[in-house]
Length: 72
Image: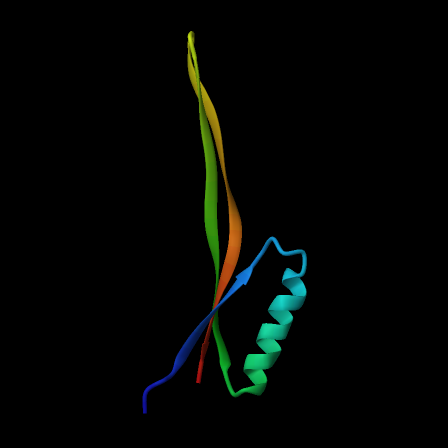
């Protein structure tokens, strides 16, 4: 018998990430699923600015959401 897997995406910037994560873990645990992994997904932003004397810009990365994998 092979293992069954399920992936759930949790958005970080909702203001309720802690509650969303706990609810997801509780719901899947009660449904017979075991936590397999939690992977943070990184996104980025950048902007380039041109000027007569050259160019410049900025950029940064941030964790945008989590991918939670369950198995049973």
